[in-house]
Length: 173
Image (cartoon, rainbow, N blue to C red):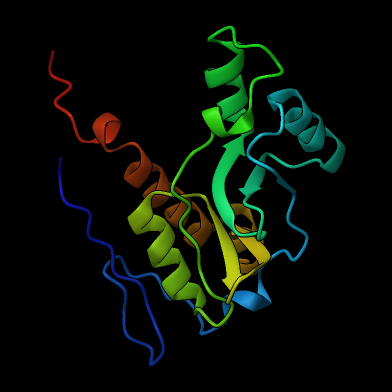
C-alpha cells in the first residue's frame, strides 16, 4: 500500500502541500449538534427507519454511556444487510464500522480534515469529555467552507484514503 501523506493549512497561513488554504475555525462552528443515534442491539430495520425519518445517511451506535462505538451507513445496509440476505431483525452492531474516529469541539477545521483524510472517514463524531455533542460530515465541511474546489479536493482525498486498494493498484492487466 502506498503511504498517505496530506498536508493542510493550519493557523499561521502556511501553504498546504496541494495549495489548499483553510481559514482557522473550530469544528464546533461547523458541526451538526443533532446526532442520530441507536444502540448496538437495535435491529437494522429500525436503523433504516431512523435514517428515513431523519433524512440522514448514517446512524451512530452508542454504548450505555452515550459514547460512539460504531457507525452504520445506508451503504452498510445495502451492501452488508440486504445484498447478503440478512434479516431486518439482525442487530446493527454486526453491520457497523468500528472503531469510531472522533474529534473534540476545539479541534481546528484543518486538523479535523487532516484527521478525516488520514483515517479515511467521511463522518467525524464530536465528543466533549464523556458526551457525544455533534457530528461533522464531509458535506458539512463542503457547505460551510463555501469553496467547491476545496470541498472536492477534501472529498477526493478521503475517498482515496478509504479505498487505497482501488486507487493504488496496478491496472495494467
